[in-house]
Image (cartoon, rainbow, N blue to C red):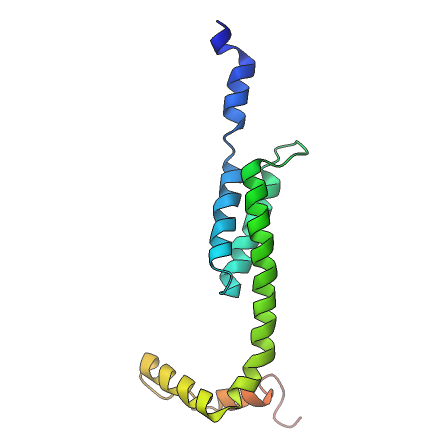
Length: 135
């Protein structure tokens, strides 16, 4: 009867924690996709939420949740750094005529028509996209 006692059963079932598993999986996905900032930030933040939900009223994190938390925090930091890098350097890249021609050619191949009919790349390159024309 000692085989079926309550302590052994609780010990076995406590090692299964779906929130910790979700945190580890999402942390791994975030780590693998940190070069795409939007997906890294989305999956990384979900992983952090699931890691803290895995505590289930205790003060300790499940080992899988710790792994997911470490991966997701690294991915969040790298995703935010890459987002800042893109936002800082994109206007400088769009001022380069060779780069703009390459982007226009690529977008024309994808969409089948000239993408820059309204001067969108010009406004991004000059930083006047969100400003009124008179300012």
